[in-house]
Length: 291
Image (cartoon, rainbow, N blue to C red):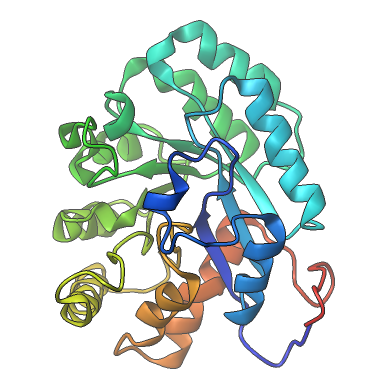
């Protein structure tokens, strides 16, 4: 793998045999939804590492973790696991998840899906999970904004709902996923106010065949740029795609086209993620795939 280009990491990927209705949700129906297919797309876009987020449709915690370990091993470490738990299943489910994850060295983070599963990020049942994240120094990613599932309730996914948790757990790093879209301005305020909160750029674009797609790209860039100006820094902004919902090439181009200094774009596309998730230097550790 060449090293004469900036380091890149996609902080928001999904690859699971339980992914719902890929033919309709993927960015194209014939997507190669395999480790090999994802790595080819990553190589084509110069992406060194990816964080693969478990989905809550997995039948149980054990099978979800086993799948994550398989993805890590098959990708030779390039796909790092982010685990998830459903707090609406009760305190015992959270305790079991923590016991299962406690000593696992592979974990890159924990993901929560409030809008999909109908709970607030400040739900008291999550206290042991946040304490675990602090203990293990793991970032907590929180789905914010619109949901793919029409049964989701976006009242649980407003960016402002993360503010209370960020204040209550100042030593835990939180990632506000999808920039809280459509509440990007609100998300910017939460990031600006709380130094332990980041935001990612994943899942902001519709399918390229959607009406007004080019205008959508322009609008997204303006909104991201305005958010970064409001925050006053690009150091807590992370690139993510939400693959297979969004093509890596287009997700990278969204960031590459921001009217920012090249150093800031490089931070967003990889350097910020390297620091936050403790990713290794690709020259030492990232295995190549013929690149």
